Image (cartoon, rainbow, N blue to C red; front, side):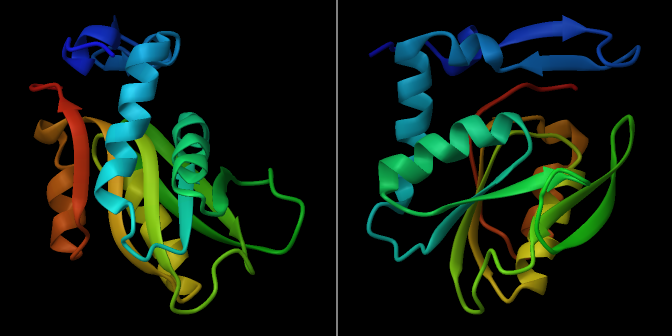
Length: 178
């Protein structure tokens, strides 16, 4: 297992997808087996034996992490997808990103009322995607135990937004400034 900071495994791509954005590319972390295992273990560790009923993850890089965490914790995996990607009856939530707008959806029977849910994604920036996920889960009657991310961009305010909603936030590393 590597002792290097996880930030060492995350590539920064300037001006992607639009000028001025410093894109934090976690695919380079995924390509290193030791760093990827460590990230999955660290995302899972606080929630072993915590009475969580399901892992919910955000489209698309969140699926890679969420599936691995669900496997690690022996829990069901529930995807929140971009609009138009799920085949069954869904509920939808629109939100804003730091560089545009989007809509996500979840199957309307994916979460049972009262279920304790851990939400996973790769990166927390402005919090738009995470807040949309929280709203979908809560509309289905689920309770968010925590939202966990590999990367936090604290200067963009997403962590504070989630905390103001009463959501516990767990992150593995941060990049300041953008």
